[in-house]
Length: 96
Image (tube, rainbow, N blue to C red; front, side):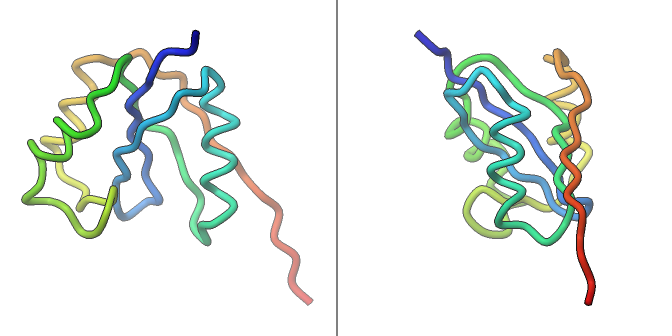
C-alpha cells in the first residue's frame, strides 16, 4: 500500500502544497509540469496526509486552490521535516 505524501513545490514565485499517493515524486512532479509554463521544483515533502492541516495553517498566504505566496514560515515548516532530494524536471522548449 502506498502512503500519502504531502509535498511542497515552487514555480519560482509561488508555492504549491499538495498531496500525492505515488512513491515516485519525480513522476508526480513531471505530471504537474505538463500544465505549467514555469519550471517546477520540489522543495519539501512530509510523510502522511497533512495537506488540509497545512492549508488551514497557512490560509492567510493562499492565492488560489493549492497555491500560496512564498513565505519563510511555509518553507520553515517543511524544512523541519526535511527528507527531500532536490528534484527538478526540465522540459525542452522549441521555438519556431
